[in-house]
Length: 382
Image (cartoon, rainbow, N blue to C red; front, side, top):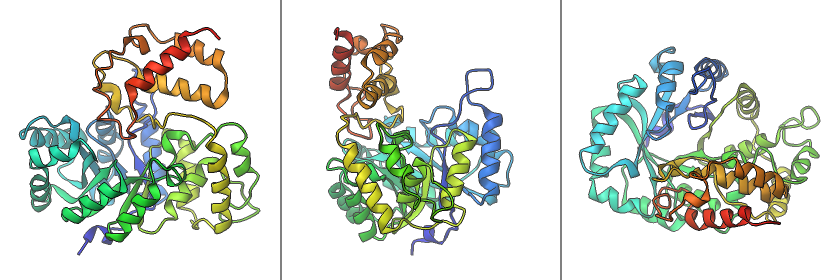
């Protein structure tokens, strides 16, 4: 019996990947994060998500959440990032460090982070499945799951062969749903077939579905159907993406990496204040947006920053964002100017194509090739 489904998890989850910076010391704005956490909890939110590699996120949750609210009043999820594990002793070291960073003595949910492709061998090599079983038996991880970045076929094989996990965290958004590369629709179909509860990540595709290129925002803004109460409130562009994910069968909660009070309020209004699933008319509007989006040749980067392991310090997410901004806005001179502000030892010229970034990219981007292409485009005269 899957007891994860018995938990009373709120429809909106609070992701800790994109906390706001500020506060005068170059780190996170802890006072603002406290206000955001409080607002979310007051609205009925109770699921918080972080990971070992979300730099500073675990400590921020310790200060803004765990140190300020009763521990039994919310669910707290953390993850063991596969690419950090180099030998069998690392598992306990990382787990204990996470408990210390977050100031808790157990996790409500603990995830095997970013399963797919290269990580499958590590699962066997480092006895990850046995380790997760023992964590659950000990009560230090009350529920165990995994986040997944691979094909639907690979997910089907994994769920068929491995039966210990209680939930799956999947990247689902309307752009990936209709994408031939990502096929989020097939991932969802496989999870439902295996009766495994779904936690949605990247519902707004790293923010790209919050401010669409060209006149695509206008397609949404021209429709008054997305609020759930036609004719009363014109919904934000982001709310369409959030509601798309939350409307899917089998979805327990939709994680949003919120970085402002405005985003908190928008998501609360979308998912926790009289939520209604998308209608067929609204799905038609989304399909129209997706078809129009296809003409933009953007890189599918979600700014997760996992590639910040670059040994040469190349600012990969920043370079990819500059390129995407150019593709969307067509402002080559503005983007060239932005690119030239990056120090020479951190721009595309510093990439040695070592490939260290490739296996950790959840989107499967050939980063060295893309960085080389972007550097050549921005360095040439036009």
